[in-house]
Image (cartoon, rainbow, N blue to C red):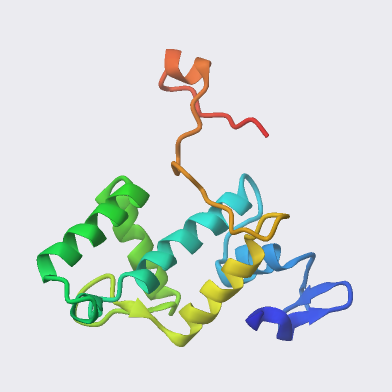
Length: 161
């Protein structure tokens, strides 16, 4: 992994010698600047899947596949809409990735992955593998229904583990 340069025998250390127990914690708190509360593993998968969209749907790809722009864009929009569920979530991710330097803005959003973005995506692919070696999936992001939540939409969702 690209972040292995920060790895020591007992965990990960940043430039200030701040300790992180594992790769997931290092990425979540050091690289992303988030806390480790809640469901950080789900967050890593969500970011990974968002970045996969940029890697998997390069805008020059339609020429390589002899696919019309309209066919390509329809495939792209379907994948993006299925993942993000709203333009707010989509654009927040594009803005955040750009601000962190993981994408290059280009002429419009979402742009493309930078070298740092490609390396991060590689690290996320590695750290989000399940025990059988397959990459996990966040499925329907944000859907954590409970009977109580369905009865009262003001109740925050809970997640069974």
